[in-house]
Amino acid sequence: MSKHIEAVFLDRDGTIGGSDSIHYPGDFHLFTHAQELIWKLKNDRIKILSFTNQPGISEGKATKQDFIDELITFGFDDIYICPHDQSEGCACRKPEIGMLIEGAEKHHLHLEKCVVIGDRWSDMVAASKANCIKILVKTGAGISTLNEHYDKLEEINIEYVAENLEEAINWLYSHYEM
Image 1: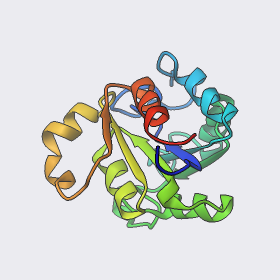
Image 2: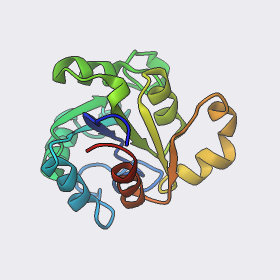
Image 3: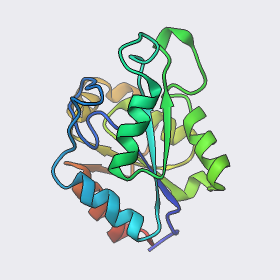
């Protein structure tokens, strides 16, 4: 066992549910066991924070509040959403670390004691830049991340590649203090 985990930043689309494309609130469905895994972490006093790019907000396809309302019902302690399109060059859109820094500052977290679980290369690059523990899931875009974007990951030491969120959380519990 190494360090105590303070928080888990979870990506939305492809990680906790949906697929490798965006499903807007109302059409988004959690993967089997995702809800109970979120509550398991919460019951062990681990902060669960959303960490998601949602450019459809800037395009008027949904509101930030629509996403917040949905994610709160899943049990998230706090929600960090980048509403910007990739072309806007903001500091919050993954692979930038604005959402991770905002969450760390608000909740007094040490990012090296936080975990990022996601299915895209941008999740892993952001986690690496912020010195977080990195777990890539093969759901959603995870397989294409490994097969098509490996060049973006070659300098990154991903701690674990999991088949799904359940395997990711089980690995976390077996390797870190929770």
